[in-house]
Amino acid sequence: MIDIQLLDRPLSPLTCTEYVYSPDAGGIVTFTGTVRNHTADRSVRHLEFESYEPMAIKEMRKIAETILRRWPARKVSFHHRLGTLGIGDLAVVIAVSCPHRREAFEACQYAIDTLKQTVPIWKKEVFEDGEVWVAAHP
Image 1 (cartoon, one colour):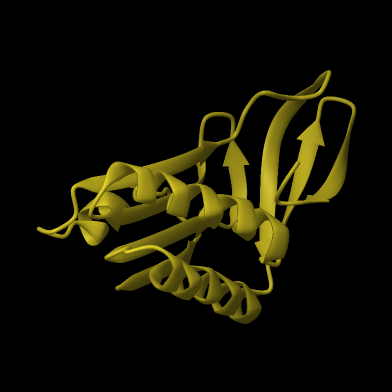
Image 2 (tube, one colour):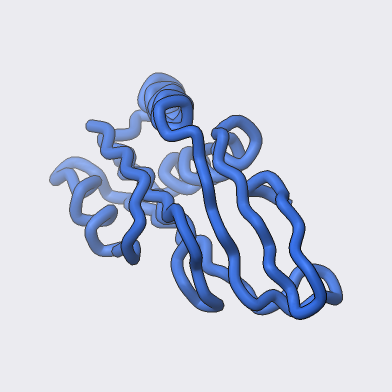
């Protein structure tokens, strides 16, 4: 019912979507976060993601378990990249299946918002004119 992976290779939204498929789920929502080419008014060259992996997995599991309790979710999948990512690379994929679309949208929104607030994954933004470490959220 829960699939959590921290990976150092490209992510596949299809893999997450296939994992959460359930014959009684009419709604599957997938969130895909990509590396954009700017932050505010600065040009981004690439991002570097690091994590305290045991705690990150534990926190993602807590989020998934909350989703399974609060919504009629069938399955939840979290995949997050670690390492250096270029512009356009996928940084995170989250998929949730529920009987109906509204529930699936709500649960997926909760998943990404909570991940960004609680999961110990850090990113370094590398710009043309320097770099800065930030949490994996705005």
